[in-house]
Image 1 (cartoon, rainbow, N blue to C red):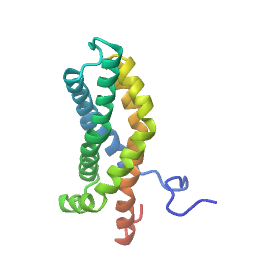
Image 2: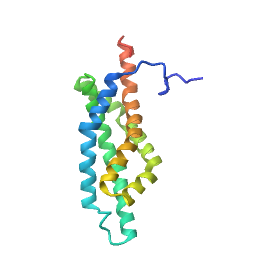
Image 3: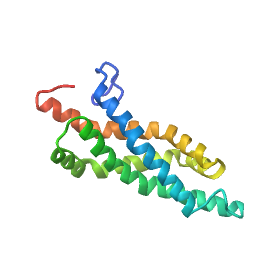
Image 4: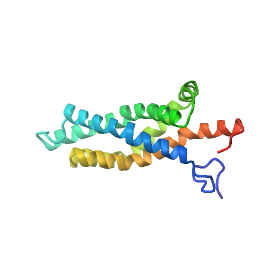
Length: 166
């Protein structure tokens, strides 16, 4: 028994445009920004060069918190914009959706981040920067899926109302 509006409705048509805009966002926008952000965080709060285990743990936890609560909030807004443009939405429609859905999407992002925070801490604390970025990209597949669902939930509803289902 499947609840209407569930993200797990497998009978729906696969939205190739949505998938490709998310791939392009990940490869050309989010991925490079994460790479440079993690390099900056490592230079600001070094984990690998910390003198003690406690210092490295505090630096790693600080990096995780900055990533989860500051960077994620920025990436949610960026994802609204890049996927909206990639899907042919007008800038005013994207801004209207951001005004309506941004706070809820950020809260969901933070909730998702809290669930994976122990794994993120392990990545930031015990792995070199190159592996950290790769690990976080794998974790971000889950994050991107959640945010993509939220971003497109209202867009799909607007398309059906306007007479353009799917």
